[in-house]
Length: 66
Image (spheres, helix red, strand yellow):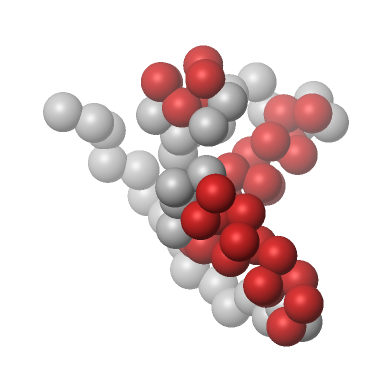
């Protein structure tokens, strides 16, 4: 069984064009918009050396890049 990860909620405002692009990207990746935004943030943190691995992605997702 997967570990339960604590999360923190916050409001994010995006312009309509950006939101449409995120929604389309999420649909292509078979993710929810929330899941896609979490992935985008985690990927950016990894690329910039802020984290080694994301705690909210499953081991399979982090290996496959999805």
